[in-house]
Image (tube, rainbow, N blue to C red; front, side):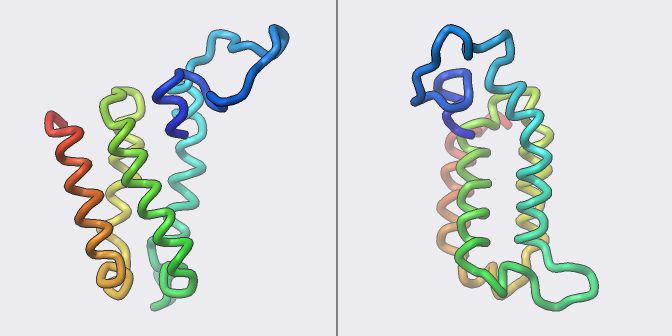
Length: 124
């Protein structure tokens, strides 16, 4: 996802032949289409279900930690993109709904990521 920010297309490291070139769709529009799927997956991992006291974060903490870090990194690098900003902020809001045990386990990573986010995007 972050490759789109740097090159304008997904799969920035791959060479493409003329038949597989970019057909007028830039990376931001691709991310706009893909982000709802990432948001749904992040919500399933980070937010505990209503009828259960255990979230996926409690069952699979390493996966949840990666989702947390990737959410923060994506917001750090892509928040200045106006079309993506509402979706990114919606996913970032999921962090408020994480269970307390996961908050305690990831507090230092979360604090560092939020600090980078504020420094990189102070205007927003």
